[in-house]
Image (tube, rainbow, N blue to C red; front, side):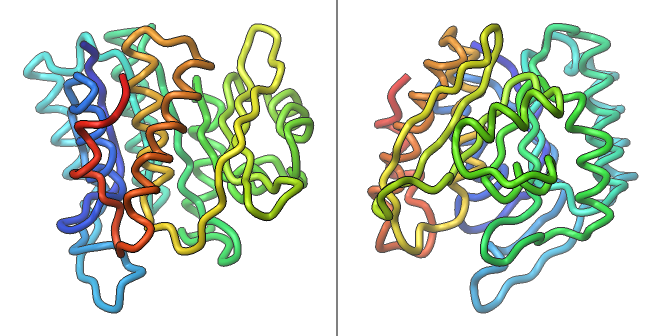
Length: 268
């Protein structure tokens, strides 16, 4: 159906970064060109891990080869995720520009993986600042958790009205913000702000303790997947949240998302 360039982390075990995004995109019928910014044995939250960053110079050469083979033409979307250094951010910016040169209507979805509560930033400050200055304004869609939305906007965000204000003040075209507090501790709120009227769409989800990592990567990929299947922005939002909820429900007693076991049940 669609063709997507995805740029993010890659793990040998688990379902985060590209290891979550690519299977989800494939399951919903989309071809994916995947460029890893870092290669890891597993998520660093486990007791042991090994890995290293993929050099931006190599990523540029890979992008050159893909373009020379004619494979950057005709892409329908770009999805960027984990970018560990300013040079990786610069590479992602260059990749977006080159894809847009071939396909001006290609949708750019930026998942600015900066950090989360309670830890705060978990990438270097200079990388986070580069994402804010170089990628956010380019994005057709920003998919953020609450911490990331607050860090990028410099404002407190506690509800859908705050998301609307941040999107307006910072000229975010379409914004998805997850994990806002709800009136009851048993739930969280996910909010979509999208043109033309920019009225917030809110969906409550169950709050769970100790959910495995990767749900944000999965949500961004599923939103792209549903949008490329012809869903409206709001329909893609609702369907991707529903599909993530399905995967979470099957992963609550696991140390990783049980994505492989859930792919066949993702609702298109």
